Length: 119
Length: 110
Image (tube, rainbow over all chains, first blue to last red; front, side, top):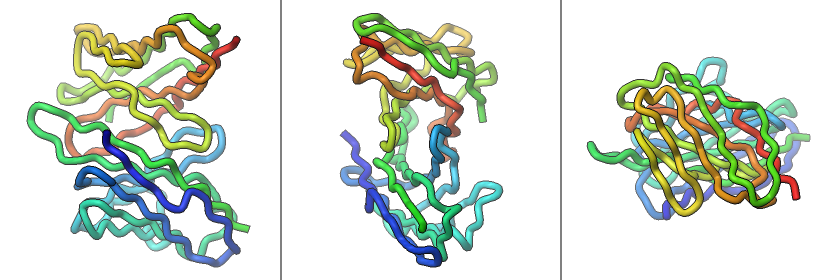
């Protein structure tokens, strides 16, 4: 079945560091990828939508200069948390959706998340 | 985007059938209904998806009435490993993202 791989699974770094998280679709081409963040005991919150070859669309309240998204190919999207601070500590999850057809709907497939801890 | 409403939590004993109902009163014509399961510190895992009537796969069944304003995820004979948060989402086949509600926290007791 479809697999989305996310790397790294866990990052611990000092305040002020920039951190890059990779999201790859392993056995299908993902024209669209989504980035979510999740705080403890809460639901997933959509951060942004990235489309291959075009700029990402950010949700209201998400700083695009803080969370840089690049969807350079049909199998890779990256999220860079720039100058991370303790309040950026969270669980970041990506998802990918392949191209649909008129008679099917590709479900979103999720990575296993990245636990980011900023000291 | 259609909003979904689910019970916050449910408890069940091992071996029982669990039915989780989701309300989505303003579901659009093009929307599909998708259920995901999430364990702590993992990404959501796809369970089942449907448009109308009944869908069944190896792990669950999804019942959707004719008006499509609600849906019920049925988990047969749950085990302790089914303890997780279950999310019901609705969305179309395009590039619109799925918006997560609070989900249902299922606790399976021995």
